[in-house]
Structures are given as C-alpha cells and as structure tokens.
Amino acid sequence: MKTAKRARTSAFFCAAAFMAASAAAPHASATGFDERGQDYVPRERTEVDVSGYFRTRGEALYNLDLDRGLTPSGQPIFPVSQSDPTAQTLTHWDMRWRTDLRIYAPGSMVGVKARFDVLDNLTLGSLPEGVPSASLSQRSPADAVRVRRVFGELVLPFGYLAAGRMGTHWGLGMVANGGDCLDCDSGDASDRIVFATPLLGHVWAAAYDFSATGPTVPRPNQNRVIGFEPSTDVRTATFVWMNWRDEATRTRRRLAGKATAEYGAYVTHRWQGNDIPSAYLATAQPINPFANGGTGIMPRGYKATAFDAWVRLTLPFGRIEAEGVLATATIDQPSLVPGILLRDPVKSRQIGAALQSDFGRVDGVFSGGLDAGYASGDPAPGFGAVQNPNLAAPQPGDLNGTQASPRRDNRIDNFRFHSDYRIDRILFREIIGTVTDAVYARPHAQVRLLRAKSSQLSMDGAVIASSAVNASSTPSGKAPLGVEVDPSLIFEMPAFLAALDYGVLFPLSGFDNTVANLTAKPAQLIRLRLNYLF
Image (tube, rainbow, N blue to C red; front, side, top):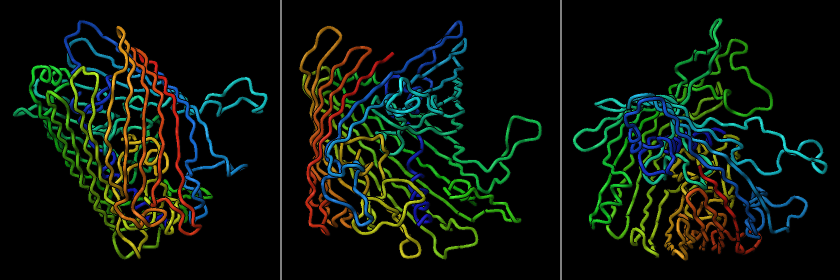
C-alpha cells in the first residue's frame, strides 16, 4: 500500500513543481520567467523595496459531508463533529502575514529577493496559553516564520542568472503555481540555478533544480553538512521557450484595438537512481538504515518527464488563455521495503488541460466568460488527490486512496491540478482537494456595482458543472459529480480588499451512498476575506 502511494506521488510530482512563466500577483517577487530582470533600472545606491499583505479569513461550512453517510472504509467524506455527528456546521478563522523583500545593489545588475510568511494559515485560537477555558493569551507556534524564498539575481547584457530558492509558476498555474494570489494557501518553490536569455524575439531558459539531497552528515569542525550518498539525490532539468509581453503593453495594445499573442512551452525531466525510504516514511520507532551493517538503500530507477504548452490571446474585447500538459513517469522498482523487490515497474501517463476566457472592455462595467478543464483519471477506486505514503489501499466507494497497487495494478494515470488553481469553493477545493479525474465547465461573470474615487464595489459569480472521467473513482460508481454556484461581493481600495464569498453545491449521483441507499444532500459555504496590503 505504501509502495503504491509512493509511486503515485512520484509520478505526479514530475509535473507539479516545475518551471515558471506567467502572470502572478503584483508583488510576486520573481515567480515566473516573465518577471525576471524586469525591475532592474540604474541606481546610485542600495535600495530596499518591501511589499506584502496581512490576510485573515473566516468561514462557516454547512453539510460538507453531504449527509450521505460513511464510505466503505468507515470515514465521512468531510470531517464531522465527534460529539455530535449530526451537527451540520463547522467554523474556522485563520491568518497570514506575507512580506516580499527586494534589495537592489548600486548599479542595475544585482539584487537579492526573499519572501517570508508569518503565522502562515494559523488557525485563530489554536494555541491557547495554559488551560483553554482560562487562557488569556496565545502561544507562538514553533514555525512562526517560514522563509519561502531567498535568491540572488544578476542581469547581464546577454541574459539573466539567478540562484537560490525561488518561486515557480507557469502559465495558468494549473501545474506549477507560485501561490501568489491573495487567497492562495501553498505555492511552489525550487532550489535552483537558472539562466535565461532573449534570442530571436523569444526568451530561452535552462534550469537545474536540487529537488532532493540526502542523507547528510556533519563536516568535521564546520557548521555545514554533506550528502554522502549521491545516488539517492533527486535532480531536475528544465528547458523553456516563450514569447511574453508585460501587462502594461497588453493593456496599451487593447486600448489601441490591437490583439496580442503570447505563448510558451517547456520540457522538464526528473530522475533518481536509488532511494532510502526510511528517511521519509513515518514509522512507530525511529529506524537506523545503517544498523547491523545494512545500507537501507533501495534501487529506484525513477524517471519522469513533462511537456507543457501555454498560449494567451489578448483581444481588444477580452482574453483567451489555455494550458495543456502531458506527464509521463516510470519507477523501475516501486518497493519501499529493503530486501523486498517487486517484479514489474510502475508507469504513469497523465494529461491535463485548462481554458480561461474573459470578455469585456478594459474598464467596463460588465465582463464574462467561460472556463473549462480536464484532468485524466485512473480506474482505481477513489480520486487519489491526497499525497500520503501511509494511506491504505482504497475500497470501491472510498473518496480517496492510492491509484496503484502492485502487482495487481501498476498504473497511475490521474492528473492533479495544483491545489492553488481554484475553480470552485466546495467540491474540488474542500471535499476532493483538487481537480483530478474530472472534466468541468465554468461560465462566470462580473459586474461593477459602484465606483467612488479610488474604491469600487463589484459582484461576480460562477456556475461549475463537473463530472468524473472514470466513474469507478466516485463514491457511487457513477460519473456526475455536481453543480456548484459561487457568487461574491468584493470591495476594493488601493491598500485593502474585502470579499464576501458564498457557495452552494448540489451534488449529483456520483456522491450517492448506494450501499446505505442515501442520496447526497446540498452543501453550503460562506467566507469573509479581509486583506490589508502594503
């Protein structure tokens, strides 16, 4: 069971964490290739630029277990109260303070950038000081400050060189997503060396990632370590080609009645020769892989390759943007138990595609469009959205579980969208966890209600209809998943944004409990988001 889960995780990870290139938040701090070098201008002295936001969110979730009873594994499809399983509403409130720091050296060539998250997604009230009922304060968590990115940049006459831990984002963010949006929860970052150069009207780039290194031991009399088993290292090489225009250029061309075409593609390859599973698998007792003369090393033979293409067409009256990916992987030896080898390799072929569109004037009162997406599936039970090497093999009717179970099933073909690529508020975001083994259509619209000086009030809404690619993955064995309606009321100022979100999911036959003869019931969500920007 652990073997199958490891195989699924490895196969998808080839596509899930690689190169970056498209639009992000205003202070993304070099998340994509399109941003690299754009902010370097002549400077007479060292300059420091600080930006970011403080975010707090409160929400109430009603009936997200859909009143459809337990899965065959004895679990609800969404957490419920243990003291009163019939209770319908759960509440939550959290916060995050994010800071992007940019330091520019004198001249116009060198800079260092960093991102810090403080109290990242911390649940309010989760760390009471002392007895909860008598608490007058909250403790600081052990990881109160998380360093997300630190890297250096050098802009040369013939290109751009960066090294360190940097954000990654590509295209729509369907595969690699920097997590730069105000409502994002995670975000990809890679320990990387990258070089990019303009040539023949395009950007060409190559990157080398230190995806995993270890195990390590201390060096004599030094405050450093060294990896002593190079064969277990995981490395990634990526090559990118793209044509890109900045936001100001696109807007200027729209106002002039001109269309702007942008496009790009990348190929990325990841590999690992050997592995030491005891270094990362959870066990009841600590394991010394080198005890009794053993090495703990397992042959792995992991090879994964992803091909991604992205295109954006900005028209005088709107935008059409699409991304597609093909990811393949082979794990020659999927076993995680030293001394126990499996005969057959685990293989994967995953396909994902997403479309976004918006139509309306640049500063118009009304806009709308249609989004759509596809994520290939796997006939194994469950959606396979959650990564956890310790998950048990799923039974037919379970919501989640491993997608390979050697030697009976050696395929992992379910593609997973990045968790920060959001298309809804309940079904994929909360219940399943991401878009996988599914196809969806999402018509949407936005209207500006009021504008006064530098602030405005707007309303947007979307309807999402979805179905499973493989009916065997759903709890009932039927393909239709649901129809969700998601309206929002949004108030914006230059340094403040507040949004009141609502969602209602009408589940379809895919979530019915055929064993207990229970029909899935609607779920609702309401969320208040407050963002203070600086």
